[in-house]
Length: 73
Image (tube, rainbow, N blue to C red; front, side, top):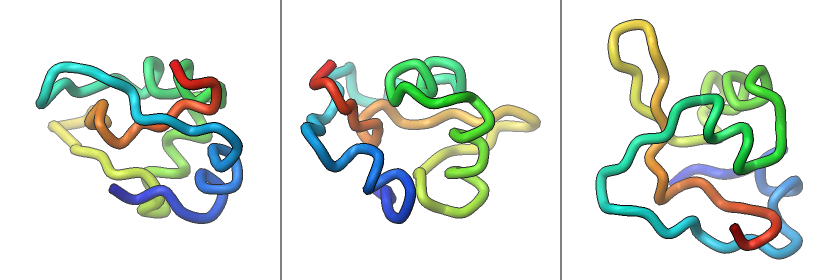
C-alpha cells in the first residue's frame, strides 16, 4: 500500500480503509470519486508511485483495499 506525499496529506484527517470484497479492483473514476479528487490526480498518483495500482493493457485498476477515504466511506 503506497500513499505518500500528496495522497497522505490529502487523506490524513479521518481516513479509514474502504471495506470491499478481496481482490476487487476499482476504476480510476471510482477511485477519484472515493478520494474526492479528479481522475487526473489519480493518474498522477499512480504515475508517481504514490498509489498502488495494476495496469491491464491500457487501463489502470486500483485495489480497493488501498483506497482510503477522507470521510470514512
